[in-house]
Length: 78
Image (tube, rainbow, N blue to C red; front, top):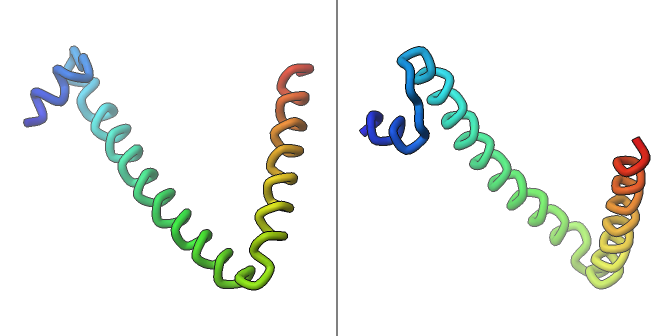
């Protein structure tokens, strides 16, 4: 099974196998973490902002647009 994964990833030397497995494990566990974190954050958001949901979505959208703009400007001029 691992041999086919290594062939798919084009791992050529034996010393490349361990780092490749570590990167795959890292990616898997980060994906699980981010998925569970997002569910918890959205649940908390809906629980605390249930009655003010329209205003909360509007304000978070505006803040998202501004933060993306500031990031783009910062990256462009650096």
